[in-house]
Length: 126
Image (cartoon, rainbow, N blue to C red; front, side, top):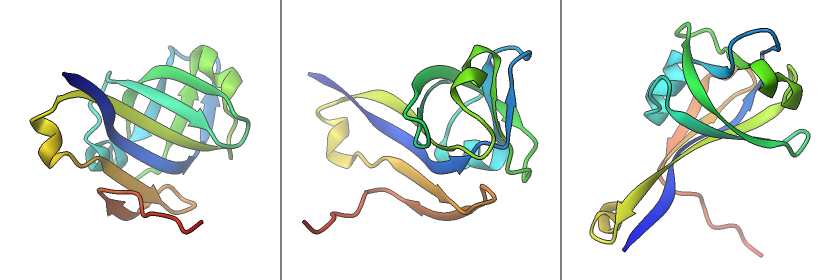
């Protein structure tokens, strides 16, 4: 059996730009792409924490160290500068691969600078 699992996420990044008249995609600081092992042109799912929008697009590289997160093209209707996003990727894993499975979770500060990397989400008390 194969299971689709979370591969990586960029947690609560801040949108810095929203470019309606740009070829569709999401430009992401190269440091963040590397930290989450997201390849340029890879499919990404975006969850807008601010307004509840959810959509799929692809990643493109933005200048390393810039903190840039730019939602482009038609998706610009779904995110505005200042919005908080979760950007996620998924992959298919076999049961054997799941024995050593750990997602790459990247947490940022208010300037989209990496502040923490984890491989599991802490259990929250009820």
